[in-house]
Image 1 (cartoon, rainbow, N blue to C red):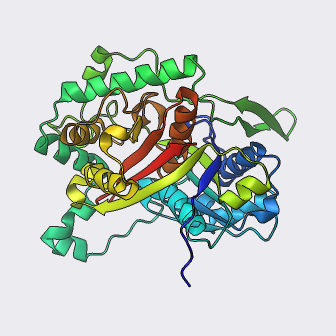
Image 2 (cartoon, one colour):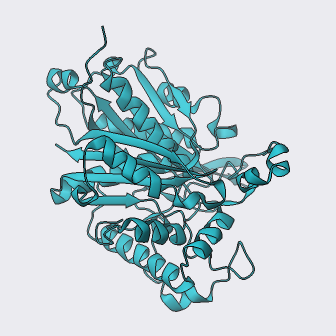
Length: 398
């Protein structure tokens, strides 16, 4: 007999501060340590929950190798001190890895296969190169003209979007400036209350004593937002992906390090442990688009997620549209008519950073707490994805 679909509730949603890569505050910190901090932080929000009821952890990671290889999900669970009975699986959908992990965890609960799950995302762009240590594309990508877009760098796809959707350099820089302005204001107003502090440990050789000195400091603030940026400074930056292009380091997302974790449970667990849900996971959609214009992916995923939720776009109170590039954010927003006041009200990845596979978990925590703090009902997280995809997830404050 088929099981009845049940609701999946998010009872904790946290993230570490986001560090700038490759020379930021996490430059020597292992990604599995970041993941452990996020998992422990999430568990700390619901002290009444018995960790033994958690069945599995699904963790997103875009480049799951080297320091973030060896199934970092299971490594994180064990290092965080959870019972050995808690499993772990690492998933990769590039920039949507964290959101995909959350959708998988929620679906396990919705179909009745689990009652308590960890969903998380982690990425160290300081320690693991963006394409990995030994990238190797199938030669057929270059032999088939219709597939060559797979080989395009992300910046080149953004240039394609800017050209096709006629997004000016001035508009891209203006969005970048607004991202920083909103992020700085949010920091000053204490609106990133989903952050759990992280203790940075640095070990430095002491030539005088012949020993290793250990330095510890606690960080609790994102490194990326800049209060001193302005349109004049952004306009001086040269294009980095095409000689006559408009995409610059200033109107693109920052390379970053970070981790986020959420606890997803069934109604039975909510009642058993007297938990107060933050949000209900409503719907999720993934759609493919041509790889050479991958940034337009949310344009296809958003309507699909809305249809799955039985909602209209106007029903959304908060839209977290990941700022991989200003060009694609503007193109998607224009085509769908997104409300700029609802889009990234606390700034986006241009200011805050984009630690690839972690971003879905980080931004999910942001939108969920934003709904709670401002007493709003529906929020959405959406993003473009490498090789031509768009992903979107919808949450309801409860």
